[in-house]
Amino acid sequence: MDFKCIFKEGKVYKALLNGEWVESKSAKTESIFSPVDGALVGKVQAMTKEEADLFVKSASNAQKKWATVPVNERADLVHKAADILYKEKEIVADILVEEIAKNKKSSLSEVTRTVDFMHFTAEEGKRVVGESLSSDAFPGFGKGKVSIVSRVPLGVVLAISPFNYPVNLSASKIAPALVAGNAVVFKPPTQGSISGLYLAQVFCEAGLPAGVLNAITGQGRDIGDYLVSHSGINMIAFTGSSKVGKHISKIAGMIPLLLELGGKDAAIVLEDADLESTSKEIVSGAFSYSGQRCTAVKRVLVQDSVADKLIEILIPMVKKLKVGRPKDDADITPLISTSAADYVQELIDDAINKKAKLLIGNKREKNLIYPTVFDNVSVDMRLAWEEPFGPVLPIMRVKNEGEAIKIANDSEYGLQSSVFTRNIDRAFEISSQLEVGTVQINSKTERGPDHFPFIGVKSSGMGTQGIRYSIEAMSRSKAVVINLK
Ligand code: NAP
Ligand code: G3P
Image 1 (cartoon, rainbow, N blue to C red):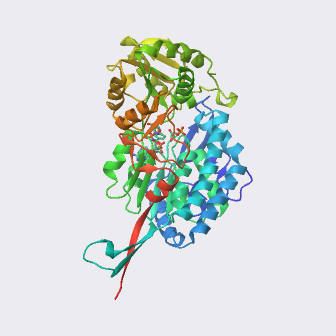
Image 2 (image 1 turned 60 degrees about the vertical axis):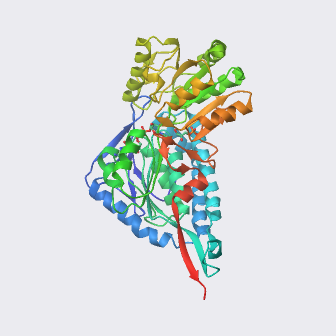
Image 3 (image 1 turned 180 degrees about the horizontal axis):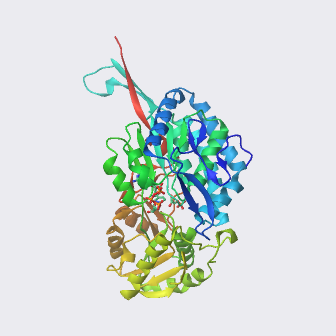
């Protein structure tokens, strides 16, 4: 990459501090190995807690000036970064292929989706405006007061992203934060940090002032708690597991949190559904990126009367999924780690021991798990409730929509659900009863388009993401009251 900002030497990547790419004084690094073949992708800095202070302090200092830069200039910078990312899309996508084993097509689409996200955010940032209120709406005040309410930044946003979208779910925090006038301390996932550093590099190259974006690497378990509870952090935007998200919410204190966490999205299939298109949506929803998506379809709740027919259509589609290497554009690729694959295998074994009917799969080569589908999964099985984050789909047969709603809602999670039916009235009635952030009617569960609100309830999160919603979450109202004589 022909960049001015030098962020790597050989395979050793540096961290971004105050406009400079730096190494840890501890001389410690984290080695990032490819989930595909174990080859070394690169080494990133294992920053210490003492060094973390410098990242926060520098961001805090830089933010004050950044907040005074006109919003159209902040937006221009985000546009410029998006243009650079677009130019470098092949390089960044190739890193994703190696680092997180996402197939090339999906990796490219992650990058171009991020470019679109950044452009849209830059424009939307200019449209987030305040309001003015007159006192005469409230009894007893007459017209004597006017409140001018504007949006102001929060200060320093800590952006923490997960391995499965290390570019997109990082930019979807960084861009709204920056356009709203915040500085950002960005901590990418360790497996995904090289992709994250490429993104930081793009902002550096676009000419972002020193300190406005600092990128710190190191294991979450070593520096995460320290950063999250740091007094210089004014807001946390986190995407990751419910376990870590809940932990953060306990220790973060009184600062705003935006949490996007796990999910166990149900696809509810009613007897009048178009089973052909339903099957397509379910297969794509369950198995894209080998099921490593928070919004993956993670269980099917199908009315018994059409379950056999659904399975008859769905299984041949699963058989067609290509299993193999991400660079060959396989649909099912090795999972992020051996421990992730071990966990998926545990859930499969539990279902088999409890007599679920294996329809396809349960084959494994190291961390590559073949697409697996079970019928007759029941509520006593772990697969009914736990998030595998792998290519395993449990089918649960239900008598009627009431039972489907009950099982869907009995989950600790509340990200999304799908309802497949030709009857729009039934779809709306069921949607109104589902305890989730979003219901998709006749589609797989999914986050995009990215200006839609993205909401997790219960253990699936807190707050609303989506371009305008994220900008609002990363700014606050400030009122100045004019008292008229
Ligand atoms: P994770 O293990 O929770 O890690 C997420 C991020 O948190 C990583 O950057 C990690 O750093 C960091 N971290 C770990 N411990 C921390 C601590 N004590 N304090 C602060 N940060 C800490 O999740 P993951 O395995 O990367 O991602 C998979 C999970 O994310 C799934 O549950 C999935 O459903 C969820 N997810 C949710 C959404 C959504 O939008 N709702 C989207 C994507 C993923 P290290 O990598 O260094 O450990
Ligand atoms: O798991 C990441 C999440 O944000 C899903 O996005 O676009 O795959 O539905 P998407």
